[in-house]
Image 1 (cartoon, rainbow over the protein chains, first blue to last red):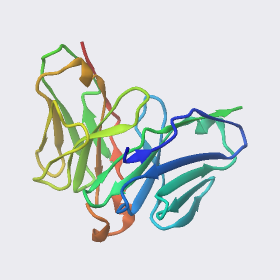
Image 2: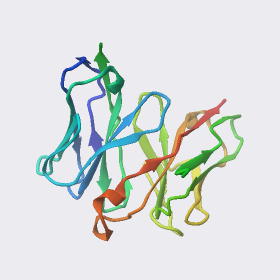
Image 3: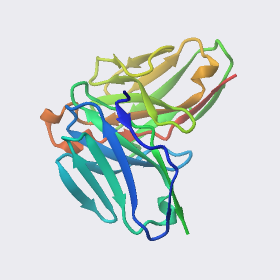
Image 4: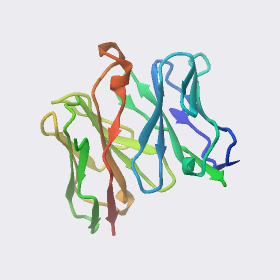
Length: 111
Length: 120
């Protein structure tokens, strides 16, 4: 079993729609979770972090965490073409002090 | 504020050649990381250094060595390059080593701009 699993996509949504990105992880000890966005040819940039069960909202982004189900998701409201990128889920492995990434979900927002 | 700086940005090597990728951060971070990213894939951890003076293997350490020269610098060496090492390499750093040591936001990892390496 992979430590972090994401649907590779592409996930295609029309402009203005809600994009829903999902991630599951295997390490029950993980306490911190990060979502990174990566444009083609660029380095990853942090867009959201979440540490507690429930929802966390930041502008058009909402991260959702369910530690019991080992599931974390990212919702993007009012999707824009500029949101087209690969979204990487990354739980912090507190037991070994490292960040492990999923393979990413490619999001395409159609104008 | 430069953040995380990697050199070189682009490099072409012949099979069997050696080279070192350099990385430096100016954020006084404790931990540093080397990842590789192959086309259409996520980042895979090669080696990391949780603190100055320590290094540990990640998911894909074979064919690589690292040196944590001081708190600022963490280098990655390919002793005998192979075509399978053609990839984009990212150096990264973060402040905190452990959830218990401080604010969760300290675990945010910051990335360098990447080094594109081709082995022919």
